[in-house]
Length: 304
Picture (cartoon, rainbow, N blue to C red):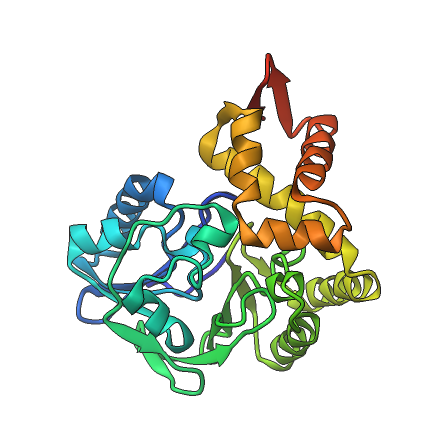
């Protein structure tokens, strides 16, 4: 992958989002997204390593594409290490100020995030400069109604967050609550298709070039979800339980069931499946066990 000399794409995993570090002409640097709190110390180490590789002195700014826990869980640790500013989508600014863990999705998904303070905002339509180049901020509802993506026309780069991955896109969460999300995701795919993009830097998975066939595949997947919204709920139940297990690694099955029962996102997904939350948990856990994504030994579930 040939990115401009001052940019590092740091691919992580499905617990922590990818990160993009961009060196500034004055020796400082900006970072897009920070991963999950479980791996916050690793995020700090990766940023320190990338700063050295780029010949940058310090991190001065974090930009969060959205505030799901896997994209901002390293904010607090990085701010403590570097004293950097934290910019969040303007639609989430008040949620962060109040630290409303339901509005921020942490209660609703039964996930964790270390509290942080936002010192600025990302406003759609208001460009910013990173690495000496202008980046456009685009509102990116669909997966998350408050998300943004960042596009650099000069370098033809797109930080696409969870709107577009090489193998799809994130759960369309608004639809689980009975709100519109599929139409917004469709509009975002069309907007991305209209941009000049040579490389996509996604929130998860590898960076990729030639986005046209990836967008076509995403359109087809979205069409199947719109035709049968229950598929979105099935996917959400399984992927959210698997995500919890990536964090926890092992837990008594009854304790995990209680945790899931307290999560509004999963209760909504269960309702769309026409199941009680207990029935939906048993179904999803059974699917993950059958797929060998989990193991069960003496009443304890283990991540695989």
